[in-house]
Image 1 (cartoon, one colour):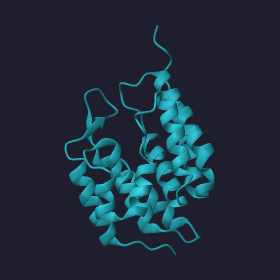
Image 2 (tube, one colour):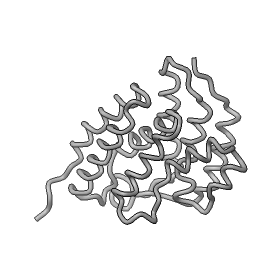
Image 3 (cartoon, helix red, strand yellow):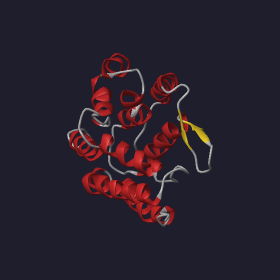
Image 4 (tube, helix red, strand yellow):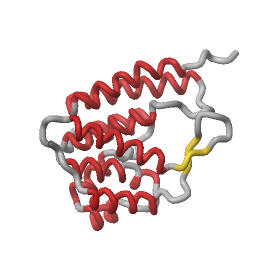
Length: 190
């Protein structure tokens, strides 16, 4: 059985709470704003579920910390060195791999680069990326059109293709979410 430390979770949760303070994202209905910590907590829940259901040994604390901190470098004022100082190099390396390099010219280039770097990390980091996309496939923001929804679904298929060997349980869950996401695609408006 894979065990994890509530104290490790609490430390990373606190850091994520401070780092993402005031951040929100678009909800399901027009004008709705969701506190960003909802996303962070949802990704961590997916990771914990995978940890508890996986019969092989995982570095559970690494996976949970990376889940809670996965957007810190990309979306906050905190950087790699801050994570090294608080959580160590292994966690910081995982979070950095999960971070898109916005210096690259396109979102496709950024995703491919991130997936390549994730594949150089332990499988626990692969699990976090799949959990992140599972969470993001629960419902698109109200302002996304059909083209954006289809594009996001296609990107999810790429993530699954590249990372599915990281954990069969979470890969199957991602596959199901991708298939169900089709129901959100809206016909293009004329």
